Picture (cartoon, rainbow over the protein chains, first blue to last red):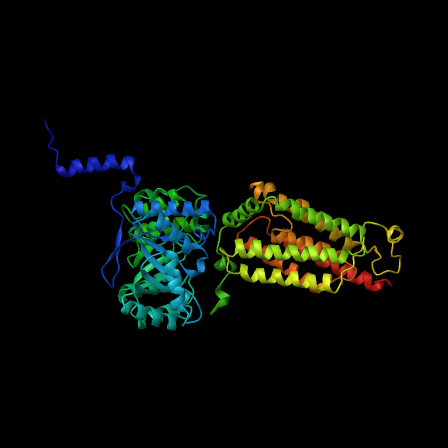
Length: 302
Length: 250
């Protein structure tokens, strides 16, 4: 008896063979999320640079950050997020972009200065560090002097010097103010902390972002690594296999990107294998509501 | 900053412990063999304190002033500033300490050493200027002894911390080049002075707190060490103040 071979099956076999050699392709394409204000699609896992990319003049460490960026782009990532607050990180990103060449980066920066009038100069200094013609996204860091900076950012956007405008907060700070700004201003992005244990954003900010059509960037997915270090003492629970997660880090990231309001999560790392693992968490199945509840239970138990 | 009370110290952490320690490793490689020179200056200070020559106060102040300036420039500004905004302010503090040391010790000639490890009689006999001279070494016990121990620690033991914690020995923080052993060594030196110069102790003590908090934020095991040495120094110093107030010579 002969079994007819369909083209789709053949492709599946080929994809399987490819998966054995390139783990990045193991679970299909990277999950893309829509930026509501334009419809532009963005890979759901980005790269944060807080602490990890602030390596100063250490040439060896700068080169290893460039390796992380190279692996990030190769795995299918796009958004890199930084801030003038992150010391030498901006220059390290700039070096990396230069070394890599035509990287398809989605540049997310911040303005972080108490003086409103000095915001523009800081943005220009940041742009020079990155070596990009213009930023894709600029955010008011931790709402510092947000009224003045938002005026600057909206003016830049209107003049075509910037594509998207956003605000950031972290660790649950000033969610009341964030909410007010989200209601009043036509923001493209809001950035905040959200993870398996810090779920306050689920109550108001995330639903509001969906309602207002604002993209959401999630920072501190691992609570600066503490969360992963804590849960790693326990074996990976069976729920991980059900969502195709091969590590606790992937399970935690899958939990975050499975929230429908989340556009992009930005874990930071200094390791090539970790950046690949992070981007790969945006492949394959995502947990549904029931599985999300099980992930919360597992992490809270750990 | 609004709602500053919601920020913990870790919110301001800007770099990893790995990056911080690599700074010292690269710094050591860059300046080698300057370590030999600064350690030799430290040993020279130790000898001056023990022998207490008339020019001792001026010489030690000049050396220390130079080393604090070196740390301000070569460490804080050149190396620490790229990863920590606060480093430029630390540099100013270190430069101010250098200025205070030079003003008090060199220009005003205001530092007089005691020799805590040599009994008073022997000290007086050895002192060409005689017992009534302001340079006469006086035994004041705890403060001076702890001061010398602290200087010896800063010169010999502090650079070995990385080795004892399983990090490369090349990350060792050396007196006269790195801020921590320079501050500890300086506190030790100042504790051996007859009239305790609190205005010269303030910034080094403050630095011990800053460095303790930095390491504590990075969750490093040696974080409490320098602050504890500083607290003990304050205890020893106040002990000295009490005893020297009681003594007719003080």
